Length: 118
Image (cartoon, one colour):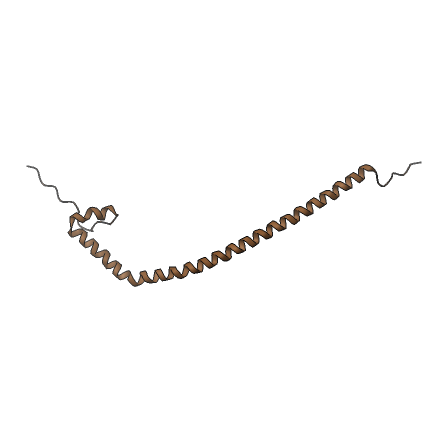
């Protein structure tokens, strides 16, 4: 009749070894992936912590600067008006105002009218 096939042939033993090797490799890759992911999470947590500290320190300084500006806002506006008035009365100063983008006086012309030719 039919002869029984042996349970462990050399081909199936080799195949089992390859499957076992692939399982070990997949397991090691998963462990490595977890280590890399944990390292990245820790790094981003640390950077977030440092950025939060720097943000809070900078926010305090920014609030101080804004408060100082608001205290001096009226004197800044007054200086702005006086500088504009000085520019309208002193024609020699107008090129400096133009150089730095200062708007010309409203309603008046900065150039002298052309003289009629005979």
